Length: 148
Image 1: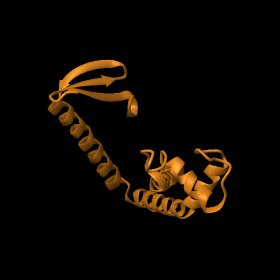
Image 2 (image 1 turned 120 degrees about the vertical axis):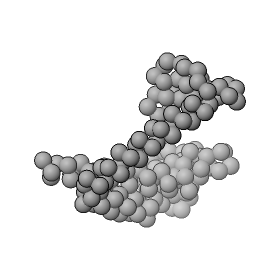
Image 3 (image 1 turned 90 degrees about the horizontal axis):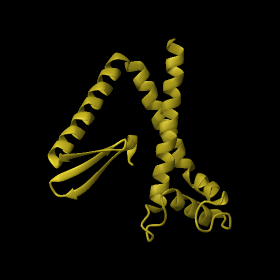
Image 4 (image 1 turned 45 degrees about the vertical axis):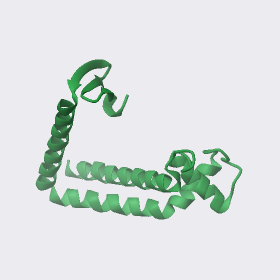
């Protein structure tokens, strides 16, 4: 299952088996693409409306997301070393210094490039995206609480 319990299986070039919360539905590929684009457009429209209604809150959330993501980017090597020391990865807990950082970030990135993962770059992206999301979400919750 994919995000929100939805997955698509392409069995033939023109047909798609869409499995949504365990219910399978056959639909044409263009129907699937059209439905997906419709959801994306509706979500973007909703986001634009929310930003237009709350410009100050939107700017605060954006600034906090960028700031926390940037801080995580700078701290990614230390986070990678901590992940390696915690036993994540093949040699987890046995490395130190730059090797631990590299191994930890590669493990967070799904493995080394040679093994088919995204490597250290992927690990850095995971750390940065997670911190940015948490930072933006936290500011959003705090600003909502202040509005009430």
